[in-house]
Image (cartoon, rainbow, N blue to C red; front, side, top):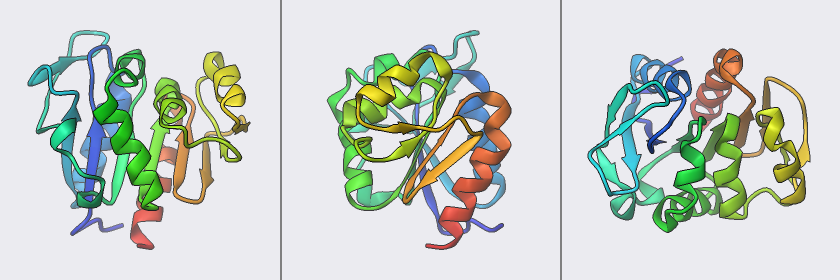
Length: 174
């Protein structure tokens, strides 16, 4: 599917999960999307759990939800850091309010919780934060990808093909 003309932000922070950031980033670029890595603004480069660097294109305090068609939040331990950045959390909250695609995988559910966008919605995540999602008001579903309106969630790296397909499908209908 063609993502020409689509703009996607992928959030980054230290300790991100390698596949959960790079697989979507490369997949969406391959499909023709303009992809920007958005960081909290304290560094131009963030390192994965294994030390792989990713360069930040835009600090979160300069990112505007209306400039993107989708916001993708990778997992790892980065979401625990991301949720302390009001600019990153606010970007996710505002993108959801505008009906943009908001996609999160693995521990990225923590950012959705901090953004306050899960109450009454179906979502999935890595099993060890399931209780956090439920306590935030979500209905937890143990499936490789869960789509609830503009919200797309997945559990772990083996779910990445389904996760990316769901995001591409959602963007192709907009």
